[in-house]
Length: 118
Image (cartoon, rainbow, N blue to C red; front, side):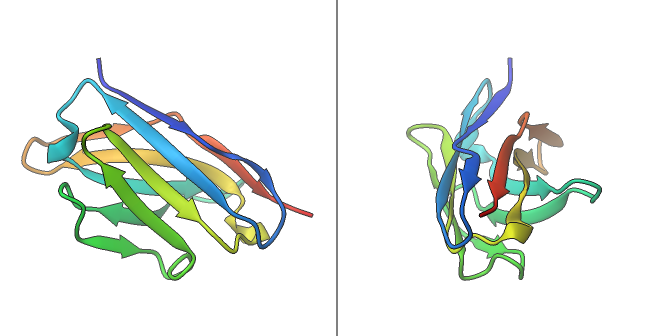
């Protein structure tokens, strides 16, 4: 059974930091590109960051470039999103995604809430 379980969300003040984790199981994690997306209230889900199956390449949405860092540990089947200098506009539910074009497989986690407010 495929599972992606996000954790690490919460309430943080502007300028603060959070580290999200996504633990994967039920598929060969090291063969999948991993991505983070987010969805703010009343808005569509948007891309945040991606990392290749072996840790590269990485790519970021312009809105988070220089503040967020995506990484992965294939030994732990986990992908991370380090979020620094958080802004109120970063408030959203953050979702983990696993994608393999060759297999035609695309998996989603249940999301974790990040709220940035003073």
